Image (cartoon, rainbow, N blue to C red; front, top):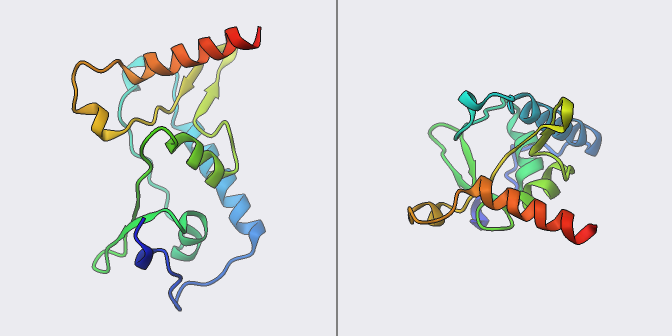
Length: 141
């Protein structure tokens, strides 16, 4: 996080909590909409959602890593093992990155540290996620 990008500028309006909460639920819905049950569409994907600067800042303040004055674009990075939990906290939804289909089929957003991607011998992140879920289920039983 870079402090200068996370300091509220005078031109950014403060918004009511109700608007922020509603937009977070819209973001979660759009993420779920973009999690299709189709193996051909699995892979790295980007989701862009237009919103006012004040709304973006209200949601992601404290997690902004870059701002371009030329384009007006903000960038946030969520890395390491806490990426999923950080986004869950920001979006007020523990299930923001998981969609359940009929017959209990599920699809997930997998957050992976870019440093781990450099080693080709690393396990597939989806395999890691599934093994973690299975071990958690066996602990609960």
